[in-house]
Amino acid sequence: MPEKAFTDGLARAMSLENSELARNTPSLNYSGYQHGQFWDMRKDDLEGQSSDVISNKEEMHGDLNIILAKINQDKNYQAAFKKIYHSQKTEVWQLQNVLASYIRSLAKFNSGFDEYMRGNKSAMTENQKLGFNLFVGKAQCAICHFVPLFNGTVPPNFKKTEQEILGVAVNAENRTFDNDLGRGKFHETVPSLQHSFKTPTLRNIHKTAPYMHNGGYKTLKEVMNFYNKGGGKAFGFKVENQTLSDAPLQLTNKEIENIIEFMKALNDQ
Ligand code: HEC
Image 1 (cartoon, rainbow, N blue to C red):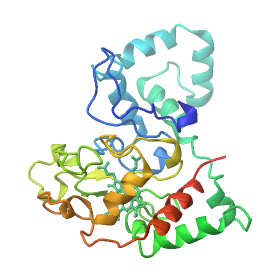
Image 2: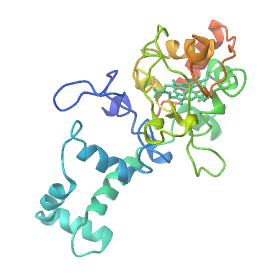
Image 3: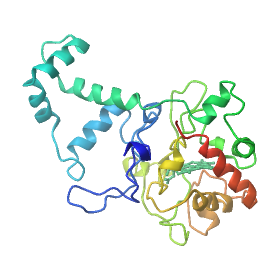
């Protein structure tokens, strides 16, 4: 749903047979700016992302070759592809590439934050500015959600995207640890990747509730409470290698409100 930054508003996505999938649908906006797709980063780029979802039995249960055959029967499509790739016949990689190119275009950089950085001093409110200063200061958010993409893609070279271990719970009661191995599922012998997840962008975050890889947190206030206490370890979970500091942030309610208010400045127009 474009108005929800291309998420679905559900805690976890529904399969074709209407059963719940394992994870929350991530936003497509700015996903071209991360080296690692899906919460567990199992594909390096958007070309791999589309083929994974299209062939996944629970998601689209399709076949790129069948789609390609249809495209090759359509003169308009054929002409359009030829114009881009100059080849006689359309090939599967071209189909993946046009889909990925569309997704890459979903990054407008026209939020209040961007406008402010371009010099429009009225594009952010006073509270949003206070919130930004907390975000990069006392609240330590920018240690992982790097400015200016607010995801795990590391400046200044933007050549890699990081995953982190927070110790997220099944829901905001923070009583039960979520056992999802995340990236660890593909690297069983690497302790530092168990239960790790891609650091997602916070751009448009006000439009994409519920939150976290499991959609277990309904509001940004619930997310802030989790961080303020010190993540999973602080709730008594045995989280090996938690990369989030478990020291309480000691943010006041007003400070939390300002950080949430700042994140509104990350909504695209
Ligand atoms: C140690 C790295 C780290 C720090 C520090 C950190 N985050 Fe995160 N953040 C992540 C990761 C990784 C996720 C995804 C976790 C998951 O779903 O299991 C995440 C998820 C989120 C989400 C939910 C995103 C979504 O699409 O559902 C929000 C909101 C968020 N962080 C805001 C913040 C704020 C605000 C701060 C500062 C108070 C902060 N983060 C500090 C790494 C970090």
